[in-house]
Amino acid sequence: MRSLVLLLGLMVSLLACADGQTPASKYREGEHYVALSQPVRTGNPDKIEVTEVFWYGCGHCYTFEPLIRKWKANLSDDVEFVASPAMWNRNMETHARAFYTAKALGVLPKLHEPLFKALNIEKKRLLDADEISELFVAHGVDADQFAKTFDSFGVSSQVKQAAARARGYQITGTPELVVDGTYRVSARKAGSQAEMLRVVDYLITKRRAERS
Image (tube, rainbow, N blue to C red; front, side, top):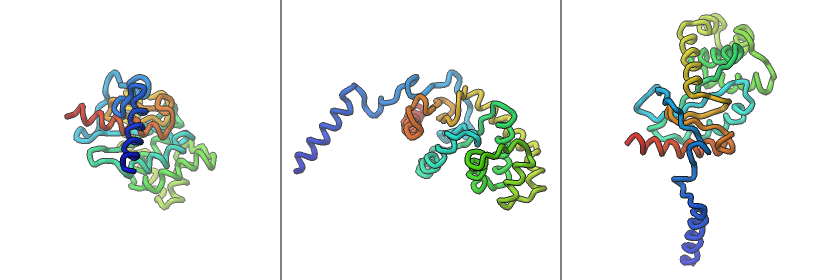
């Protein structure tokens, strides 16, 4: 019986390598991911940074959220996850400001999903501070505190930095993932949202080797 199990294991290994691929070479630059021509500086050089570029109004980002949440829960200590809103127009910039306002007020874990649902399920537009304020207040945030934070210098600076990052990443859609400011992964190239995360796992290992 043990011999049969060993034989089956060998056959699986041979089939996996039949096309010349091994786990280490399964994903190829240009086919499954893109290497940035100019790497983008990360926030913490001591960590391998994985950045998700998203938009609250993106249906694909909304369906990706449960996958990314589960994946984040099992990250190694040397990996840091960062969410960074995309913005190609004024509406997206307003939604990015909502993200950084929630983060500054310490309520992002409570507001992240409601912001997604407001735009994707409830079909709200959240085009200005008043509409967004109503959502924050409904989740326990003081209206005056929201208003001061939403228009604050700190939030404005973070919005500008996020826009600059997205330009540096050469983002073409959402959601996209960037590994250590060096490699960009999209569902279009990876094949699916689930496969995006497998490619990212591979690239995290690759970056560890490149750093050593």
